[in-house]
Image (cartoon, rainbow, N blue to C red; front, side):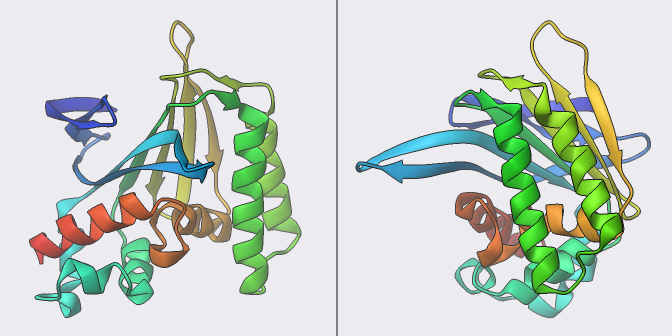
Length: 208
């Protein structure tokens, strides 16, 4: 993956305006953070950048002219975004360090619950999730380490990079699991980061 152009700052973390995959240029169309409010303080866990092919707008024309305040509440808009046959790339930068196993379990739980709700959780999905959990098990997410998830053709390539260490990768080829990982990050009111969803609604809405 290559980096093109200037950057957008998300909680003091730079995200390039564009990235290049093997043969396409994706644009930063959503950014935000994940976190919790504890004892009236916001604890920030990660900063997120969502990169999409600009042509994603052609799949969302039925929402043309709708305000972002309406799009952000419309899960069907995000369902079509997730199913759109375009490349998608998530860049997730760690703000608060945690064990990789904690992140893996969070992802597993979120994906499994969504699959179970749609009666899609079978042995193949369980095996795919176990491999993801195993991938993250031995890692420790220090501040500024980076997780990337590249979605293309119903597959996902998850990569992890920490300073001074080589990138490690895993490929997820179970389409149901891939869909629900997208749902966790891009799923409208069902997504893990409301700030990212609001940003997507604003930026994609302006392309329509």
